Length: 207
Length: 252
Image 1 (cartoon, rainbow over the protein chains, first blue to last red):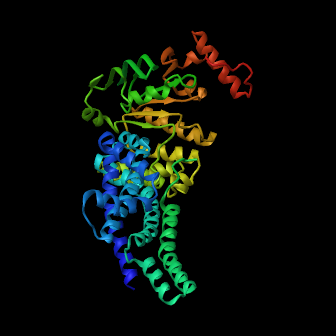
Image 2: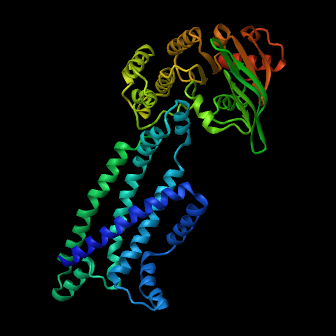
Image 3: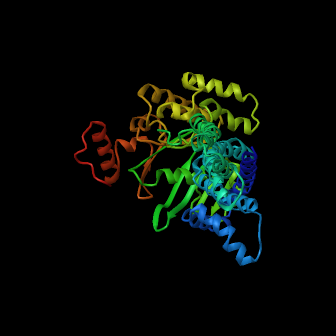
């Protein structure tokens, strides 16, 4: 139960920071391409080439050794995974804003729709319909990534499962339960993302 | 009057409009014809100030916009007095056809918006699919939806880009009849179209563009007696294409 709470606490921090900061960064990146967009795209490309586990270990050992500090592994995991989530969310949101068909805005201008209504009744609803399904899927991936925290000694659900297994040796039951936990937590989010996509994301192609 | 004077527009090295002069008087229909890529859509967007020309002047009644340099705040005041129905329509995909027509009126606080839209929906035969989303209807039905959205704005100048391309003859007659009514009410209409018969019957002015330049212009009879070889050749190929004969088709 303790491991479960640590996983949920870690996920909550990673989700909140990633979504709030990532969304802001993504929106700013689309607005200010040179100053924010390009640097965050570079970070995203570098991060795409680096396994998360390597980044986590690098933040846990070399970085702390270089700075001469010792940080609680939970905080290291929270900071690293929040950073990863933030970059993924920013990339997702920036891409969708940049791909927004400008012609819808032209149509709004030609029809004399006010700037406020163009933003709140045309741009935002279309953008949110595109953003939310992908954002949910990113959060599912990030939730699954939290098990990497076990490798830097964070007592989250996977590490606790390993420890219990080491004591009572019931791998089938323990790891099946662990798998069931992730399935129960992730599958509904997956289904919700697909439902939202099918229900609200309109076909832009206007076949 | 909506007037473009010496309009130039380039994208990089490609000159799309090359010194075009055009006038659209209130209560008249101007048909712009020409081969693909001759600058018809660019001209329409320039006149509507959606893609302002690189140089030249657009006059809308007593307002003069000189390019380069016209202030964008002033430009925004011309919509929807001048409005456009785009070839690709650009119906907002998260709204039904009815909501697409309602939104601009609601945004501008127009009294009786609901009645205006409902009357047009009924008149143009959109009622059966008015509550569907743009991706749930055919291109022709979307074209009707886009027309309802534009007509509901009661513009002074209406610019239409190939808006009947996917309609069947019955609907084309309906739409063109409505456009004639609008003309009679004093609306200045510019229509980019390949419907030569409509141009013959209804256009007060026909403008033939090639390579971003006006090659010939005049009243509808120029379609029967063109004075330039280019227009004669173009009309000949249109007639051949309508008859299903593409054997002499070449790029003008």
